[in-house]
Amino acid sequence: MTRRSLVSLAGAIVALAIVGTVPATAETCLSPYVKRLDRQEKYLYVFCVDADAKDNDFVAVVDVDPDSETFGTIRERLDLGTKGNETHHWGFTDDRSRIWAGGLFSSRIWILDVKTDPAHPRIEKVLEDIPATAGLTGPHTYYALPGRMLISFLGSKEGGLPAGMAEFTNEGRFIRRIEHPAEAPYAYDLAVKPGLNRMVSSSFTPMRNYRKPLARMDLKDFGREMIVWDLKERRPLQVGRAGAAPLEVRWSLKPENNYGFTNCALDNSIWMFRGNGGGSYEFKKAFETGAMPVDLRQSPDDRYLYVSCFADNLIQQWDVSDPDHPKLTSTVAPCVEPNMMHVTGDGKRMYVTNSLLSTMDHAGRFYVRLVHIGANGMQVDPFFNIDLNKLPTGPARGHDMLLN
Image 1 (cartoon, rainbow, N blue to C red):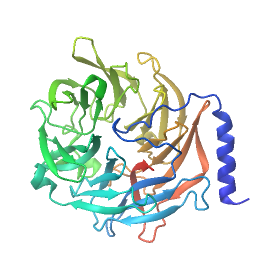
Image 2: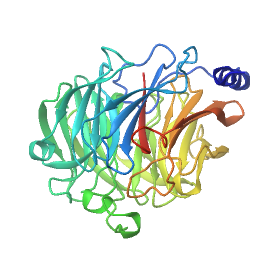
Image 3: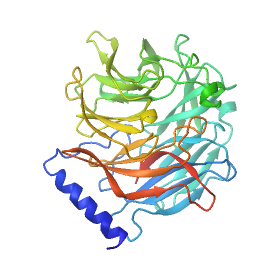
């Protein structure tokens, strides 16, 4: 039996376990303004750092079309032209025609065309002067607004504090910088709830700290503040406090719900933020997780949260259908130090990478794995394994992912 046949058989077996699940209603963890796929994904884009920083960073295009003869292989590598960028996070524009992608060390931003030929992305433009233009460094979250890209930056022009946000057109023209309140100088992620005209942002640490090896990082130089914003006015309304290093911001996907969650990496916990009906928000610990929860994802039906516990080598699935009484329902170990997750639009698959930062990784070997999600929880696909250690340029650290 061929490898492709084995993969197809494994998928069929897992599919039997998910019959009767609720159909997907959203592609989770993307800006609500991003155009959704109307089909199963065909390409998985993986943002990769050359592990020894001797060769250029790149985008790997993985064939994830189960009907393709090259399923489960790297079909293309887009050379980004420079090395040592610490390529990290990225995001689609609202029309899904472009990906904005950036480097935490270089503060360089690439605008990639993924519409002309999705199997072969190309560099449309490189923004080389972000610190001079926006006065900020460490571009992190790329959040699509109608015709615009809103970016959170981890630090000031000099690599310290305060951090902030900046807004651009989809084509790369700088519009404005958005200042954080003085009592909340750290930044990390952001997410919006359009129906409520609210945005919430979170905290991490600036370049002066994250460029150091983990053992030398100053653990006091991490934020714990979360900011509630008036979305339309880009105006801060409230500063709350969560556990140390609140990272991803995930609003409940149901329009009527005025609450969400964040994973606090240095507090081993998930915290909830929730509107109190009077215009302000409360912040409280929802539950404790495994060690160092570094990524947080949602199921399309809003029932589950997925937490990657980097230091415990596992991913947890939590039932939060009753947000005040969460329940751990499934655990899986897809690889050493699992980090970024990406849940598919139908809620049945999750792709996983295992690089956090070059200054924090200890695994030494890097992969992209696939986890199937069904009625019995999560199961690692035994046949899908993108080995990032045996590339022509040597090992690479895969971080964030997008589907097309």
